[in-house]
Length: 280
Image 1 (tube, rainbow, N blue to C red):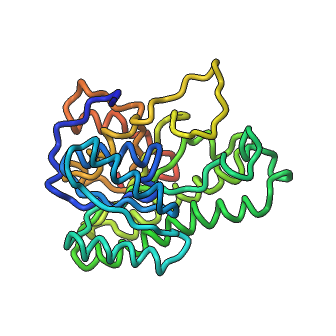
Image 2 (cartoon, rainbow, N blue to C red):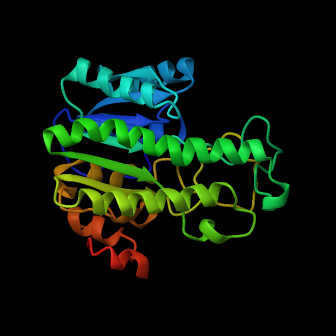
Image 3 (cartoon, rainbow, N blue to C red):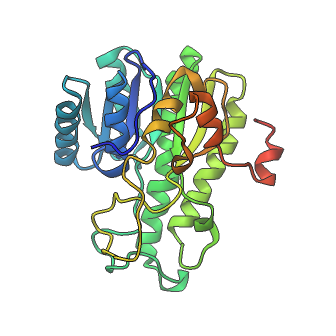
């Protein structure tokens, strides 16, 4: 059941690629987008879970609204193949959500996750994190932009994290990779400014209840898994056409406000570095 009401936006069968859309935050956003009329292409390296996600999404929405493509985002050829599948099936591609990431917890990691001093971090986990979170995000954007530049339109939304994770204790490699994604967002937005293609960042604004590998902590209140859904819908819509190089926080969305006011209210104040990009 949704915690937050979705904005009254019709996405008019816009085609959206959601990487890592087979579970957690990605699946929740995919369902929200589908409910508002979007067609979804769910991409994940786990084919079985990916197929199950599409069935769950369509059961939730009540109609056929997309398909899945097994994709390793660290392989540019597979990323391009994913874009081609979307175009072959729907004849268009409008939005890319770069949501897939190497998480802090999971198989092969201790119960508390990969939150270790950098000198104790498994070098292989560090490498995987950089390859998936930074290079994989670039490869997917690179594949999508080849189409977006042909049509002169498109939206890229990169999933980020709270700024405290960029420099907090024991937040390497995850925080390091997300700081890189923030830089990718700003650089790409500037490269594309005025092209009709936009690049923005979206984050929950705190730890969300979306990771089944997270140890239960009675003293920690987690944000609901659908915390970013309203902003995901707004960012995928025409309402965000003139917004580029911005950063939006899910928990700051106020559903009682007018759409664009709610989005502006959820837009995080830029840092000095971001101000210099002159993209507001």
